[in-house]
Image (cartoon, rainbow, N blue to C red; front, top):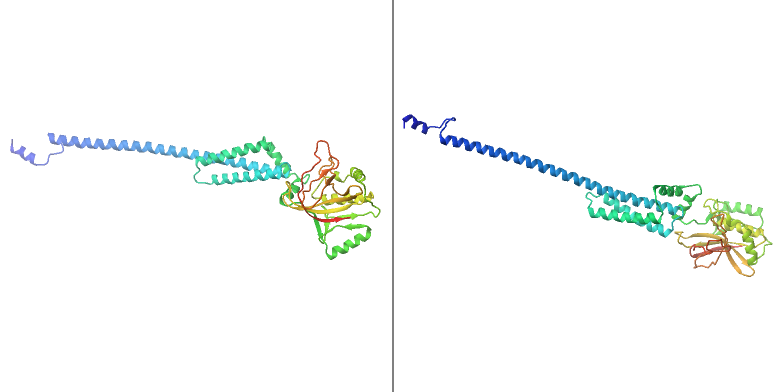
Length: 364
């Protein structure tokens, strides 16, 4: 080998060297570079596919969560609608107090449960299923019992409840908040002077006093009893004949115009004008199925010659129904009126108005 070749072997090979070692070295470098580029391309592809799957999963979860909340909101609206219909039916007198309380309590529990579920950050499937199932069962039972078949029925119930044409809304609210009590006017000095002047004008005229207060009617007038000195105690037959002719019971009950005290005042004065001795009776009745609290009530008493003392309640509610009733009054017993002149198709026994807690006055 020439000396020049030996020197060349000892020195660095040029980049374009074609010897076996340099060619193999360059090939290995190129192979490594190609391998690294392929790995990078594969990594980018896998990362892109993983990101797409994660986004799809997030979108699916979001749609499912919104669907669950919509189902719970639908259950909430159904339960709230039933509560509204229940209140309206109770106001219009179409629903008994016991049924009203049951439906109201269950409905409010479901409404609160739905509200709590909707406001949760994470709403589970099991909770959603239970809320919707219970609300659906409650809705079906309620709609069948309340006879709600369309949105029109719901609207009609609300309109009837809010109607002020007959004062039904005012009357029913009074029943819910507090039983309608007999109204009294405190007997102050100025009032007493006015009463004396008025009673001096009409002889044999009395006002009704209870615990020092003057009893007044629905419109605020003083309950005034006009007695007939020539009135006598009737027989039971004579009393029934008078009651059948008298039209006091045909007046419709009105919280603002005519209540039980007005009925009793009118019947008393009509009886005395017909020469029948009558008494005005005021008492206190306990709660019953449709009266949530205790309250006052007024009626009349007659001392018959053959049947003894009888209590007559002529408080009416419909002008087409005869509402003359006889009642066995005794403290501690239920006040259950019985029709003297039963109407065809109607029971002669009326619902209990509660137990007689006390008798305030029997004024002849």
